[in-house]
View 1 (tube, one colour):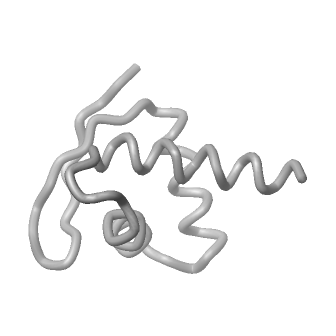
View 2: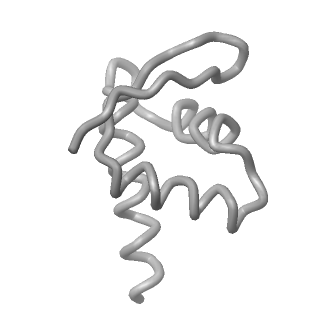
Length: 71
């Protein structure tokens, strides 16, 4: 199920619509890195292509993390 979530990154509020499974993995990744969710999302946000969707960038980040662990 896709859920809309609000988060503050670099001092401004934004919302993302993301499935529970991706949100859960994002939390686990942040915890493993000793980062806050907002901090990790800020890193993802700063690395995405201009004009691209933040929710999609988060999904791709989580996917890349999962695939890198399988190698």
